[in-house]
Length: 176
Ligand SMILES: [Zn+2]
Ligand SMILES: [Zn+2]
Image (cartoon, rainbow, N blue to C red; front, side, top):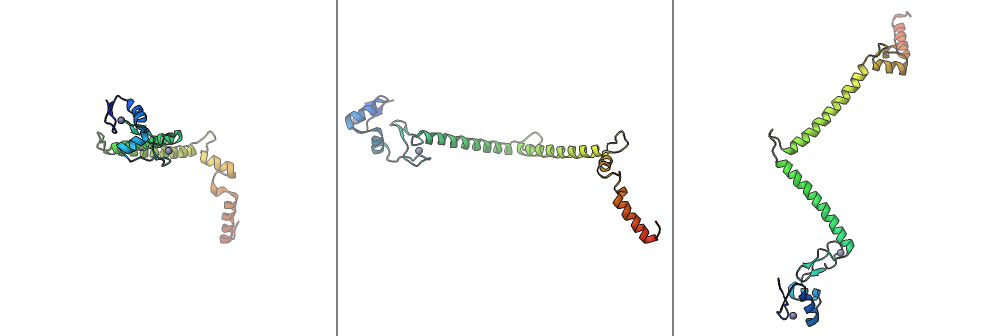
């Protein structure tokens, strides 16, 4: 594709126009671009300076051209792309209907819910069965741990409870 010099209307093969402009018209590409193509110079979204002109045919870069600004923009765009991809996926899941009539989103939420419920039921079961399990000594784990901690296998046999019971019996009856 040929490029035309907008000052003298001559045609040039790709890349030659820039040389011609410099030689014949003493115009650097930036000056020529703003004077003859577009006076709007976009701003670098990172530092707000003017964007750098890539070439007369390609126009402006997305940034001022500083490596730091370029890297930041790539980083921002990567994050935006990631967010956009997540949003699109969620949107797809909201509208995608599974054979059972639920949306995929519902199915995912519910499967997470049921897994969580199942897990807590399992842990609860494990704790209660381990407490009810009768060991070789004929005691349940619950009773044994109580016994180990307090010295008796039943809260009613704790010395303080026994004491309380007997004093109230004494008070009521006058007998030991
Ligand atoms: Zn010319
Ligand atoms: Zn910049």
